[in-house]
Length: 155
Image 1: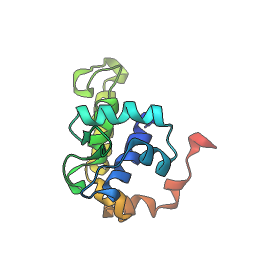
Image 2: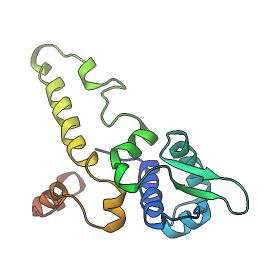
Image 3: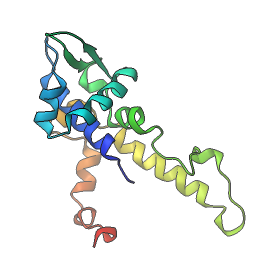
Image 4: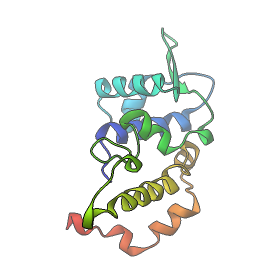
């Protein structure tokens, strides 16, 4: 799975908003500084998150951004979908809409299993988890496996 820089920045900014949740909005500059994100790039990302209903914004001298709902109701999957669309696509199609012939026939099932695996993590981890630094058991299970930290693709 590849995550775009946009998704990485969106997740970091949203996690920062979860920690900063309160009565006052947080400015884009504050978010950019806190997470070392290019401010102009972040403005576009925040616009996408706002249009998706994940965050709200207020203009003016007291303006800024805050989460549109509680941090424990916003998952990593919500953020990824808001920025990059569906979690897993094959040539721009949902895996249940692709078909293969012959020896490749089983690929569709692999893509569906992969999407289900991604969902099993990304739909459980909320912004509240990220902000608190306390992740669900499924994440702990995978990260405790030493093999998870060693990626053959990056050797």
